Amino acid sequence: MIVNALNQGVPEERIAKVLSVNVSTIRRRSRMLNGFCTEATELLKDKNCPMAIFEIFKKMQPLRQIEVADMMINANNYSVAFASAVLAGTPRNQLVEPDKPKSVKGMTADAIARMEKELSRLQEAMA
Image (cartoon, rainbow, N blue to C red; front, side, top):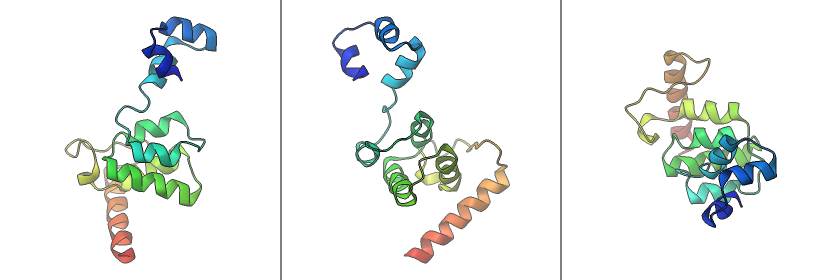
C-alpha cells in the first residue's frame, strides 16, 4: 500500500504524517521486500513477522529464503531469534555475500562454525 502510494507520487512526508510515523519508517517499509524472494514472500504474506526478519532473509540466497520461510511455518516460529539462528547455521555458499564473515549478535565465530556443521549433519541425515 505504501509502495503504491509512493508510485502514484504521494510524498513520503505526507504518508508519514497521515500514519503518524517517522519518514524513515516509510522509507524502510517501502524497501522492505527489495532483495526478498517472491516465493518466500508468498509463503509469509499472511504471517505476523517482525520487520527485522526481512533484513535477515536478505542475507540469504533466494532458495535458502524459501527453505527458511518453510521452516518458520512448520515450526510456527516467526521470531528474529529463530531467523538469526538459522542464518548462523546457513552454509556460506547459500549467502548473498559468501565472502563476508557472518556476524550474529552474541555468537562467536566458533559457535557459528559449529552451527553450520550441525545443520549440514542434519541435512545429510534427512536426505
